[in-house]
Image (cartoon, rainbow, N blue to C red; front, side):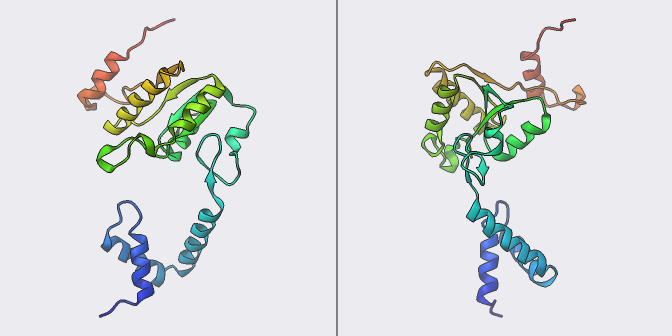
Length: 199
């Protein structure tokens, strides 16, 4: 049986999503068309609107509908701190902690030579310019993956060469975690990054 061309195009379009193979894309397409047409129309409208209206913030490089996002426009942020994260989702997680009141810069990726992502693919010139303009401490908050660690190391070298103060978020045990359930690498890092107990 031949699949209608518009259905085939929808299935193929859904495959651009990460982790979505041909079978998953097909299931999604059938579900949207058969069981949730209003949802399909809402999805199409929202996607079109997002593509048309969103851009990168001129300061932090996250997504924004304005030239400068709300967070960067706020006068209540500490501009002596600049936290570098990989993706906008990481920025949202940092904000949810409610312990950081500085500014951000979103790389929109990380160094990953195996995936073809090298330094020139990241907005590093903009990051350096922003750090120099703010005369701030840069806090590297990339993920603790091989790629995230490589990115943090590369950025630290690059920024320190410009005379910029650089720090890295600490690694260690999760809150509520028990030692017997923690992997040895995390435990070793927690021991190495221990700090003095003060009254």
